[in-house]
Length: 131
Image 1 (tube, rainbow, N blue to C red):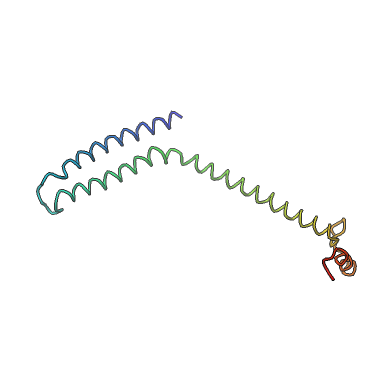
Image 2: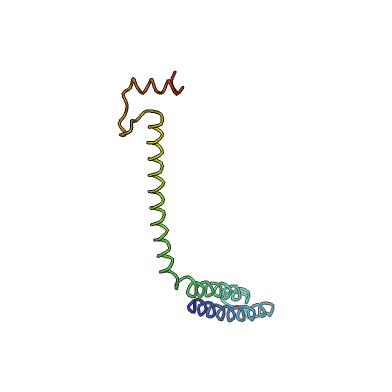
Protein backbone atom coordinates (compact mmCIF):
# COMPACT_ATOMS: atom_id res chain seq x y z
CA UNK A 1 0.00 0.00 0.00
CA UNK A 2 3.00 2.35 0.49
CA UNK A 3 3.56 2.20 -3.26
CA UNK A 4 -0.04 3.30 -3.88
CA UNK A 5 0.12 6.09 -1.31
CA UNK A 6 3.39 7.39 -2.76
CA UNK A 7 1.97 7.25 -6.30
CA UNK A 8 -1.16 9.11 -5.22
CA UNK A 9 0.94 11.70 -3.36
CA UNK A 10 3.09 12.29 -6.46
CA UNK A 11 0.01 12.52 -8.64
CA UNK A 12 -1.64 15.02 -6.26
CA UNK A 13 1.52 17.15 -6.20
CA UNK A 14 1.71 17.22 -10.00
CA UNK A 15 -2.00 17.98 -10.21
CA UNK A 16 -1.66 20.94 -7.83
CA UNK A 17 1.27 22.30 -9.85
CA UNK A 18 -0.67 21.95 -13.11
CA UNK A 19 -3.73 23.59 -11.58
CA UNK A 20 -1.64 26.56 -10.41
CA UNK A 21 -0.09 26.95 -13.85
CA UNK A 22 -3.47 26.66 -15.53
CA UNK A 23 -5.00 29.24 -13.18
CA UNK A 24 -2.14 31.62 -13.96
CA UNK A 25 -2.70 31.14 -17.69
CA UNK A 26 -6.45 31.71 -17.35
CA UNK A 27 -5.80 35.02 -15.54
CA UNK A 28 -3.66 36.08 -18.49
CA UNK A 29 -6.44 35.29 -20.93
CA UNK A 30 -8.17 38.65 -20.60
CA UNK A 31 -4.95 40.68 -20.85
CA UNK A 32 -4.31 41.91 -24.36
CA UNK A 33 -1.02 40.60 -25.53
CA UNK A 34 1.22 40.77 -28.50
CA UNK A 35 0.28 39.11 -31.70
CA UNK A 36 2.73 36.74 -33.22
CA UNK A 37 2.91 33.90 -35.66
CA UNK A 38 0.52 31.90 -33.44
CA UNK A 39 -2.05 34.70 -33.25
CA UNK A 40 -3.71 36.00 -30.10
CA UNK A 41 -2.58 35.07 -26.60
CA UNK A 42 -5.75 32.92 -26.36
CA UNK A 43 -4.17 30.48 -28.81
CA UNK A 44 -1.14 30.14 -26.55
CA UNK A 45 -3.38 29.65 -23.51
CA UNK A 46 -5.35 26.97 -25.33
CA UNK A 47 -2.13 25.25 -26.41
CA UNK A 48 -0.83 25.40 -22.84
CA UNK A 49 -4.10 23.88 -21.60
CA UNK A 50 -3.76 21.01 -24.09
CA UNK A 51 -0.17 20.44 -23.00
CA UNK A 52 -1.22 20.54 -19.34
CA UNK A 53 -3.92 17.94 -19.99
CA UNK A 54 -1.40 15.65 -21.72
CA UNK A 55 1.06 16.08 -18.84
CA UNK A 56 -1.71 15.27 -16.35
CA UNK A 57 -2.72 12.16 -18.30
CA UNK A 58 0.88 10.97 -18.51
CA UNK A 59 1.41 11.67 -14.80
CA UNK A 60 -1.75 9.76 -13.90
CA UNK A 61 -0.71 6.75 -15.96
CA UNK A 62 2.79 6.85 -14.50
CA UNK A 63 1.46 7.05 -10.96
CA UNK A 64 -1.53 4.73 -11.17
CA UNK A 65 -1.57 2.52 -14.27
CA UNK A 66 2.03 1.54 -14.93
CA UNK A 67 2.90 0.30 -11.41
CA UNK A 68 0.02 -2.18 -11.55
CA UNK A 69 0.57 -3.62 -15.04
CA UNK A 70 2.01 -6.86 -13.67
CA UNK A 71 -0.89 -7.26 -11.25
CA UNK A 72 -3.39 -6.62 -14.05
CA UNK A 73 -1.70 -9.26 -16.22
CA UNK A 74 -1.84 -11.73 -13.34
CA UNK A 75 -5.53 -11.03 -12.67
CA UNK A 76 -6.32 -11.45 -16.37
CA UNK A 77 -4.46 -14.77 -16.47
CA UNK A 78 -6.32 -15.97 -13.37
CA UNK A 79 -9.62 -14.88 -14.90
CA UNK A 80 -8.90 -16.79 -18.13
CA UNK A 81 -7.94 -19.88 -16.12
CA UNK A 82 -11.14 -19.65 -14.07
CA UNK A 83 -13.23 -19.06 -17.20
CA UNK A 84 -11.73 -22.13 -18.88
CA UNK A 85 -12.39 -24.21 -15.76
CA UNK A 86 -16.00 -23.01 -15.54
CA UNK A 87 -16.58 -23.51 -19.28
CA UNK A 88 -15.35 -27.10 -18.95
CA UNK A 89 -17.54 -27.71 -15.89
CA UNK A 90 -20.60 -26.28 -17.66
CA UNK A 91 -19.90 -28.35 -20.78
CA UNK A 92 -19.56 -31.52 -18.68
CA UNK A 93 -22.79 -30.74 -16.81
CA UNK A 94 -24.64 -30.29 -20.12
CA UNK A 95 -23.28 -33.57 -21.49
CA UNK A 96 -24.24 -35.40 -18.29
CA UNK A 97 -27.75 -33.91 -18.41
CA UNK A 98 -28.20 -34.90 -22.05
CA UNK A 99 -27.06 -38.47 -21.34
CA UNK A 100 -29.39 -38.65 -18.33
CA UNK A 101 -32.29 -37.35 -20.45
CA UNK A 102 -31.55 -39.91 -23.16
CA UNK A 103 -31.56 -42.65 -20.51
CA UNK A 104 -34.80 -41.33 -19.01
CA UNK A 105 -36.52 -41.39 -22.39
CA UNK A 106 -35.19 -44.87 -23.09
CA UNK A 107 -32.93 -43.92 -25.97
CA UNK A 108 -29.83 -45.27 -24.20
CA UNK A 109 -29.54 -48.27 -21.95
CA UNK A 110 -27.64 -48.34 -18.64
CA UNK A 111 -24.33 -48.79 -20.49
CA UNK A 112 -25.10 -45.80 -22.75
CA UNK A 113 -25.65 -48.01 -25.79
CA UNK A 114 -28.44 -46.97 -28.15
CA UNK A 115 -31.52 -49.15 -28.05
CA UNK A 116 -32.85 -50.71 -31.24
CA UNK A 117 -35.24 -48.64 -33.33
CA UNK A 118 -38.32 -50.79 -32.64
CA UNK A 119 -37.78 -50.63 -28.88
CA UNK A 120 -37.09 -46.89 -29.08
CA UNK A 121 -40.26 -46.17 -31.08
CA UNK A 122 -42.32 -48.26 -28.68
CA UNK A 123 -40.90 -46.47 -25.68
CA UNK A 124 -41.38 -42.99 -27.21
CA UNK A 125 -45.02 -43.88 -28.06
CA UNK A 126 -45.54 -44.95 -24.45
CA UNK A 127 -44.24 -41.61 -23.29
CA UNK A 128 -46.58 -39.82 -25.71
CA UNK A 129 -43.74 -38.30 -27.73
CA UNK A 130 -44.50 -40.32 -30.89
CA UNK A 131 -47.94 -41.24 -32.19
